[in-house]
Image (cartoon, rainbow, N blue to C red; front, side, top):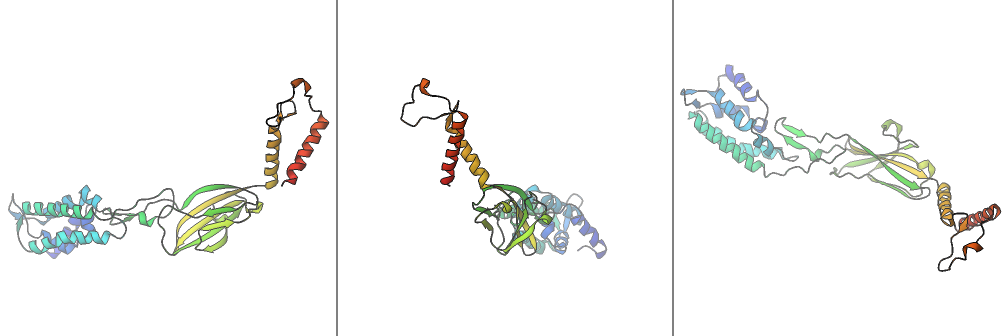
Length: 308
């Protein structure tokens, strides 16, 4: 084994470069035992440093190894098991024994190929779903950093506008395309009148597990921004925003009535003829006087108002 005075030098050579799946899971002592008897055939001398550089080239700087290690959440433990299955038998075989560098080259390359083949069969991640939310299930294991990379999306989702008529029902659902934990808590908040994503402008409305927020009869004072925030434990997972724009019923009724009345008149103030009845000759039609027009308009208004 390396003398204790040189141990730090050996370790720095092994871990001084970029990290990889080998360095994420391999024990330093096992690596020292593995490389103890490495012989440079050209000079017939024992050289541990050259063995570490060989490990670095075959495992740590191998893009195929890095790609095979991009597994889903929780499968990093399986990566370690697969690597140990290839490295530990060699450690026991090579410990305190001399072997030519060509033997090391061949055995290391075979171990790397076997690891790639086995690790590539492990479950891959489902991926990240834009544009928002903390998606831990979409994280992939990174053999360069020896940890899982998150999707790195913001917590805040874009505002979704909902247009409703006064006195009609409004429904907002706090749904996301990615998987949520089982222990979620849902908080609904409301900011009256304004369209905003500033959390400090909202007031809490409900707390629970219901992701559906319903207003049976929407009034004018319901207009504004709604915030649905989903928690797991104390961690905020996602914030969804809705803006409800309420159209007053009186305005809507007047607009609809005016459109119907406009469609019922021909140019010159003449009424549309009844269906299947031939119109009278043109010379018998007389233009309506302003008084007649006013009376007709009043009658139509009374008729539609009586019908609700």
